[in-house]
Length: 187
Image 1 (cartoon, one colour):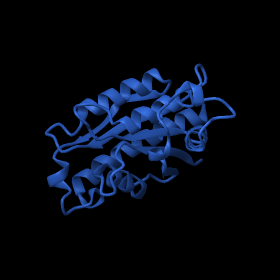
Image 2 (cartoon, one colour):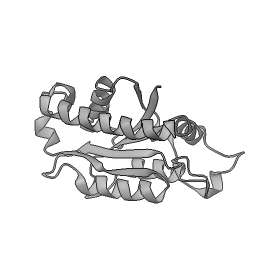
Image 3 (spheres, rainbow, N blue to C red):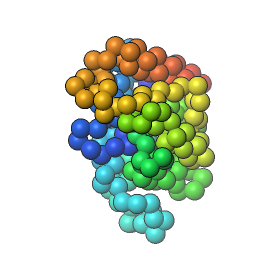
Image 4 (cartoon, one colour):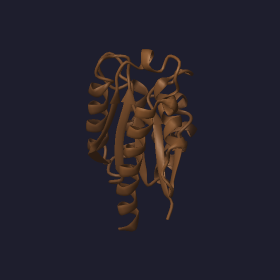
C-alpha cells in the first residue's frame, strides 16, 4: 500500500534551505511512501471568505485543496520569520481549514520540521504551525520533531541531503510519519 504525503514549504526563496530539506525528504522517502512537494503556495491569495465560494474560488486555492484531499499525511517545512510562522504557511492552513466544518486536513497525520538561521532552528515557528494545523483539523504527531539550527552556515556549501546527521534524522521523521499515515489509511 502506498502512502501519499504532501509537503508544504514555508519559504518561497529559490535557495531556501527548507526547500532543500523538502527535496531531501523526497530522496529519503521510505519504501511505500510518495512525497509530493506542493508547488504554488505563492499563487494563493490571502484567505478571504468572500472569494471562498464556488464561482469565485481561486484556481490556486482549489489546486491546494485538491492535493490535500488526495493525500494521506502532511509534512510542513517551516522556517522562522520574526519568531513565528511564515505567512505563506499560515495562509495555506487557513485555506485548508475551510469551508467551516469541512477541513481538508480531516484528522490526517501531520508532522512539522524545519531549519532556520537562529540557534533553535525555528522551534517557535514550528510550534505555532503545529498549533494552527491542530486547530484546523490535522492530527499533529507531537513527538515527530526536527529543528535544525544555523542553516545559513550549516548548509552554505552542503545540501541537507548530503549532511549525514540531517539525513539520518530526516529519515527517522519520514519513517515515523509514514507509519502513522499507514495506520490511518488501514483504518
